[in-house]
Length: 231
Image 1 (cartoon, helix red, strand yellow):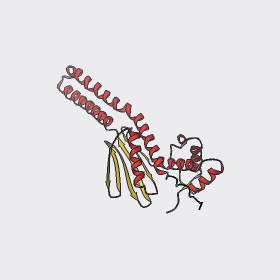
Image 2: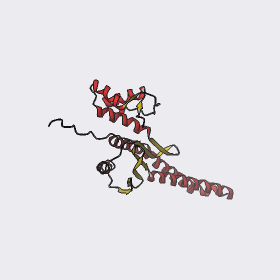
Image 3: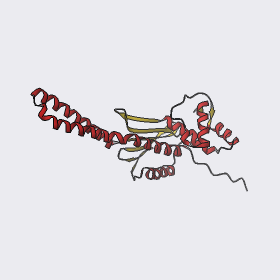
Image 4: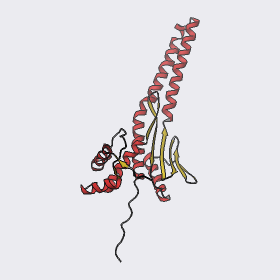
């Protein structure tokens, strides 16, 4: 397998993030070009006093952002997803630690399930899948805000019903008498849509940050204990 190389733009972002914090990772995807490998970046970082694990975390965080996806409804982010190729196999112990981390971050016990080499942790609409690939494992996160989606859908239904009633009563010549009920349905529909829509942006940002933090932490392999060269 060809080792991942980072472009000049990616290299600059990685070193900024490694030195100053992961919040400086670029939000937009930058083009992949021939550049330096992670090992070469870590060697350069050591020369200027940046720890290799900090460089690894920053580099992995960049790749995690590449796997960011958002499911939208009426332009609103009702679903959030992240995919990251680990390029290594997660051990049983690492999977168990990941489940503990998921429970802590999402404040939910969840349910685990194994099917051969496939593993998953789910809690309602939130799911985390560990899938085998040619190079190891792939970690996939996905969630949907079911409550907000249902609220918006109910609001649209109420608006549609108000429109239908308005048309029918207008044809029958009784629109004036029905205006109070039509207005009530329309206001209720708009209220439900607004209630569902207002909670989505902050929820999507929070879930995205949580998924990125977990994926970045898991994607960087644990450091091996130093070898004892003594007799």
